[in-house]
Length: 443
Ligand code: UGA
Image 1 (cartoon, rainbow, N blue to C red):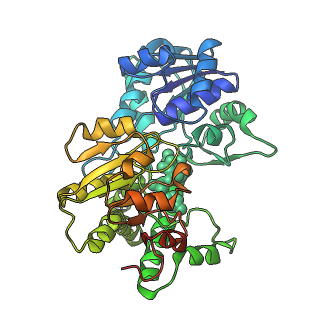
Image 2 (cartoon, protein in one colour; image 1 turned 45 degrees about the vertical axis):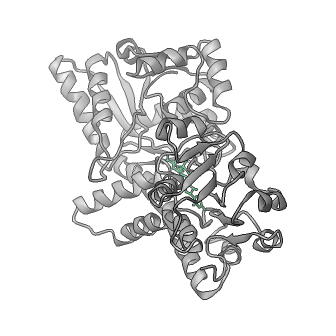
């Protein structure tokens, strides 16, 4: 099929590459000329395992093209995906400016029946607004062209996006048009391994499904962080509690890891947007408020632990930080707990030596050159001459360090394990002070 995708961010690019992999002819449109030029040269702007080979393969066989010119891309399409960003407004609601601009562009160029697919995470009711925006442009042209707008939210995880896209656990289709559902059935048929993954519903339910999924996952994390904070006060180990509750299949082992708070481009933004939607409808979503509040304070936890260890005086201390990305296997630092930690450390007069396997360029872009930050070439280099080490992101390379060498490198001999990677007794045997998250009466 002929597919056109607006937006070459995570969602658009991954979707485009995966649809090309299934044999569709895909054109990706973006307003950013420099980005499109780089993509045409085979430069993939994001770090996402498996994405680059797919983009290269299908750029070479002609199934995947990039352009800044929307007109021909709209005219050729059986399906048009809207996968542009929905950044939060000042009040936390999703900003639909880019989505609606794309809708108007589609309306200006549409020549024949197409299915317009909302792939961006958009508030309930957006499919209607997209439909109206397209219709308004068609009216200006006095064109009578039928089209359908479908909500088809994505559930990709950064770092695993290609696999999630090629092997989805569900494909949510929100549409009340049988014709549009048929088109999507055809498009997604190759993605249905051994059973039908499509869940068809109305547009509004599909839009809410996306927010409900992310809010539920964020709730699990905040809940566990709260249990961790209680565990510290009562002298329990949350890691044992986690195993104890995860064995109940109704709870499950996934997504109950306490840590430094959730970050990324999705959970913080989507929890806030759902809160705003609820508020706008006159409903006070108290649980979502709590999820958000717990997360804000959890992001401050690592600094709190350090500050208490050094009795409130971090001035002149040097802190090594392992992991800057908001999670492993990505270079994305949006809303990353590392940013809250570093800001607090600098505020307290400490200096930082940081290392991340993928996010160093991103860190340079965000913080630039500063005297109180040393971006190091390796995990080893980061700890040299530091007083304490904080693990913020659970990259595999940080999982089994040589604690004896760490003891020699760290002047004050302190490890703050923000992801509970280590067995406290092993770290302590090496003569280091160990602080985890929710592991006994630490402070
Ligand atoms: C999330 C969802 O998992 C995807 O299903 C969804 O499609 C995506 O948002 C989206 O809306 O686009 P992502 O933001 O890539 O994906 O990251 P996750 O792997 O979900 O992790 C989010 C945050 O939660 C990270 O900061 C991670 O460290 C934290 N986390 C996760 C925990 O603190 N504990 C856990 O047990 C799991």
